[in-house]
Length: 125
Image 1 (cartoon, one colour):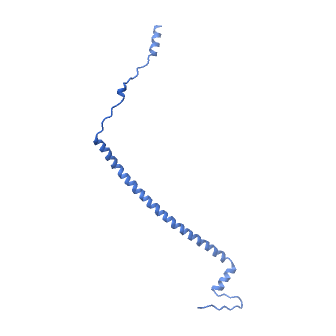
Image 2: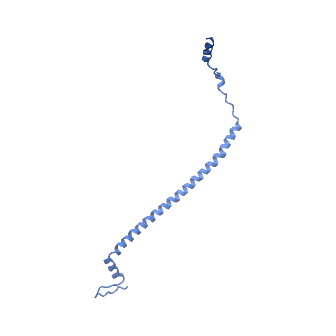
């Protein structure tokens, strides 16, 4: 029985916990040297300035490309409107040429075709 009681006592004992004093938890900040600060700032500028210049030049290039594309778009739109009007005129001419009366009228005006028994006197100036 004694042996059983000892086991119970040992199982109830908790393992040791690390106890740290509050003063030891805070690490006092070390003073940074001015040389390290200058090194960090100079490294920042060595990498940041060329990157900014590169991004600025890329932005200007993209702006130039965009403006040229917009000019091309305006020109193409005017060409499209011109072509649409030409197509409309061509369709109208095709419709007129499919009409026999219109063809006869054009032949009489331009080629001086006449009806039977008709005499045409051209107006020459």
